[in-house]
Amino acid sequence: MENLLLIEDDVGLQKQLRWQLDKFPLQIAGNRVDALALVRRLEPEVVLLDLGLPPDPDGVTEGLRTLEEIKVVSPLTKVIVLTGNTEREISVRAVGLGAYDFCQKPFDPQEMSLILERAFALYHLEVENIRLKNRHQPNPLQGILTNDPQMQQVCRTVERVATSDVTVTVLGESGTGKELFARALHHLSPRSENRMVAINCAAIPENLLESELFGYEKGAFTGAVKQTPGRVELAHQGTLFLDEIGDLPLSLQAKLLRFLQERVIERIGGRTEIPVDVRVICATHCNLGDLIRQGLFREDLYYRLTEITLKVPPLRDRIGDAVLLAYAMLKRFGEQHNRHFKGFKSDALAIIEQYSWPGNVRELENVIKRASIMSEGPLVGGEDLGLEVGQAEPASVSLRQVREEAEREAILKSLARTNGNVAQAAQLLGVTRPTLYSLMEQYHLR
Ligand SMILES: Nc1ncnc2c1ncn2[C@@H]1O[C@H](COP(=O)(O)OP(=O)(O)OP(=O)(O)O)[C@@H](O)[C@H]1O
Ligand SMILES: [Mg+2]
Image 1 (cartoon, rainbow, N blue to C red):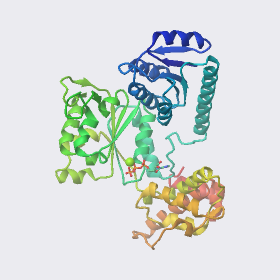
Image 2 (image 1 turned 90 degrees about the horizontal axis):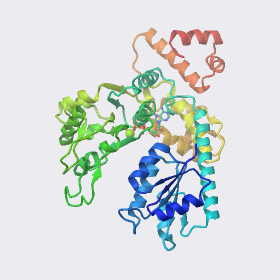
Image 3 (image 1 turned 45 degrees about the horizontal axis):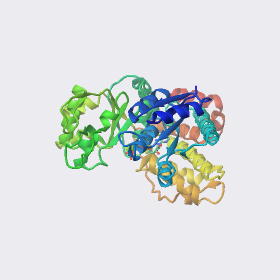
Image 4 (image 1 turned 90 degrees about the vertical axis):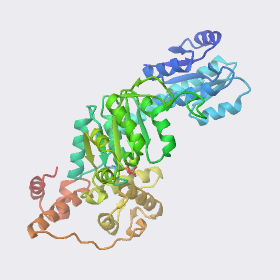
């Protein structure tokens, strides 16, 4: 299905372009709101956008705003900006905002056709590229790599709860992949066609947070020059991701609670209640129980938010995952920098396994990125990682427990090292393949 959307308020130009571009399946909108509705519905491959739209037909503010909103709703759509002949600077600005190209009035029909054909071709190439990339992603959970049983449990919970509208709170240390899980929940949900709108409660100053969340009416306070919807409203029919929910100030906790109970919002300075349909996902690295005891977090809000909680384990508790992730990251960074890495030397693998990764997957990512730059040969060595590793022995329990734990760990590690190849892992462990299979059975390792 191909669609070309023309956003132009001048009826004369609409007619002219309809006639000149008769070989393209043309749809027309005369203002930003109609245009956005069409973009949502059709996800057009290409948009021709006149920057002078009402209510600012002689300026470019409405046009540029339309451009930005199109790029949010349909990021792959190629937007070609139509400008008068004196506005080169503005055209360049539009390209900076994500426009694909610009075309100056008056148009040469042949030139315009060429630009359009190239834009359609590029769009289809990009879609094909994404399709191919996704095909090589074995995990349905949007790039969450893991072999760890605890993590796999979390993944299964995600798959199970994604399709419902329950409120989910993702807990875990910083860098463990909380946002990744939140995005996976959205992508696997029936709302995935619509937006996931994120807001980081820790990153926005307290006095701005309310208007960010709930929006405001024109004139609600000094500086409120136009009516502005908040993030909650923007997430309508999609997912609202409240990141670092533990940092939400108490005054706003009350407002959020009211929203969760009544599912309507009131913009600041507004008098009407606006119903909003969103699925809420939160994340935090804080211990919410502690915050409740300190009087910093409302208990009633806590119960609303934690209909389901996902506890993402820290990387040091995931058996074999650090090495598994390190290999995947090395491959990715190698591809990005046109270098072919064979893997890690054994001293590097030992460090990756032993290090405690206080910054979790994010820290691992940084370390591997650095190593991929520092390493001279195709094998990354321990010194390339730039980490200090102390000797830390786990506290022992019963001998049998220790033995079983060690056995299980050794199996997971060798499977990670051999990328899941059972024959090679058996060789590494010095057992036969059938023995390894039965051990995997015994320890419930897939
Ligand atoms: N299991 C995983 N597989 C692949 N990549 C991962 C995995 N977990 C995390 N990552 C990557 O690690 C980085 C950190 O993840 P993310 O931002 O989701 O963590 P976070 O818990 O939200 O961190 P913070 O608390 O710092 O906000 C991201 O680049 C993410 O893509
Ligand atoms: Mg995060």
